[in-house]
Image (cartoon, rainbow, N blue to C red; front, side, top):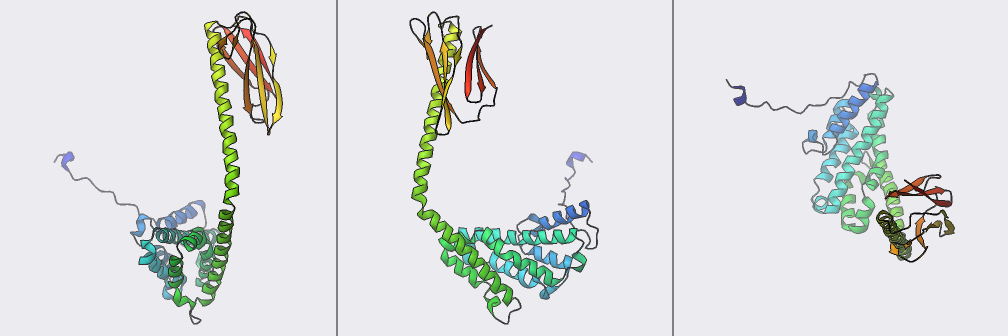
Length: 329
């Protein structure tokens, strides 16, 4: 049978597995655990569209605690409720917040498990320790995912977010204390961020004026740089075509501080049929080229040269002074 007609074999994706809980925390075992945790994090291919897979696998690996542990009783439960909430996920801001929050919550828990594994603790890790670590990370995940902007721009979504874990606000709920604590902590962060955002908005006109002046200053600097390049091009062309005299004299730069910058003026003295900025003139003239540069932008003692038509013009920078030298090829 012709091998070209044989059906192509389809390579199945490799299924990652974690190291045994009792494994020694070596570089290889830590990397293996890290890779496995990443592979089961929400929205990765191995989860097959079920972002709560992380909590199921975690319960199997560390427990199993089933309904008595955080992974199933709280993590999976609210992962399903938030990821399937129609009002939240139909709104772009709500859907974005849900997705980010689910990933951040699982990332925080993964970091905790990795640190515990490095310390050799997974075999003795209790359901209470895992729950405490998870709840401690909630406020960080909620706010880093953008909860403040959701509250400010889409307040109706914030009501939906608060309503989803309503059962946990009952005093008889197993996680009542943790739920109240995380709610108050999260509200404190959101209020602080909202006030900061409001103050930033109020002071924006003043910032706009500062920005306007900065932009204008940059535009002027760019224009001067363009003019410098243009004048240098004219001088180079005059040197190449022989319009400028064959003798180049020594010139020194004059510099003076201005607005935290230096304005350097380079003097080029020519003999014979002189030139100024590329224009032919009678007698000896000077072509002055101005360049604005910030202090320290040119390394001390650096050289810049222009060579054309047998004439080389070298500018030597040293601190705040610069010199224009000449030589013949």
